[in-house]
Length: 316
Image (cartoon, rainbow, N blue to C red):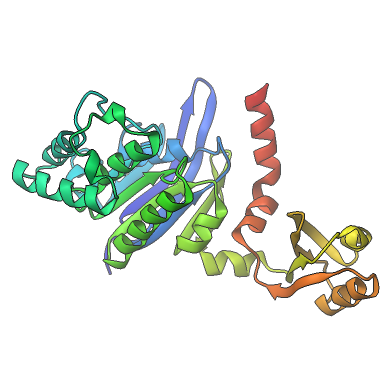
């Protein structure tokens, strides 16, 4: 059985009296896509910096590929896209990628070949001889993404990789991430967008206030959350449904999107009761489906209050 790509054991990290990561443990198995999920301020980026050896834990242990030597000695096996995008703005795009490849031990000629292939793949080959500062933020992000993958790392660590990208470019990068995992390599990425994680990840860990709230395979997390869930789509004004949706003897929780909603049934309540009540009230429906809980619904249920408190504290 292969050693885990990442092992984090009871790690704590404090900054000036603030505990950013609190006795957090997780294990990222070799191969597949692992999602580190949580609200803004949950400790995701701090945890990634600890894994990368940019920060040292105050307590606990981080090991990569079964080694405690740290990421610096293993850098040739790791590709890293930080949350804070950073490129040398006066360098030409192709030269920048060649430079990044050489820092990972690739020959200049091989780095040039790989860089040109990646620029073509990402649709920015015509910018190869332009300075980085001439590119849009989205294109710069793709350049840095290519730099993280140029040396074909075994472990790819991406901190909020899709942040700020338009849907087309986000899809290009998502396809590449899935392709990397399909080749047997490991991807660890952080995000607070649950839909991305639900579509892409094999395993997840949801953290809040520096602590693990939920972890496991996506299927396990959904099964453990339990309850019966219904997805609704309203064909017109849902005002007739308001009283029904507020009935806590029937519905335990509502995630309301306006024209649609995801509901968790109350204990002992049956989806057929809900359907009968909606039809009796004359509510127009375009969708009524018994579904498994979404990661979004689980996230809101598990850390919604923590996220609101963290946001209020940041705004204060």
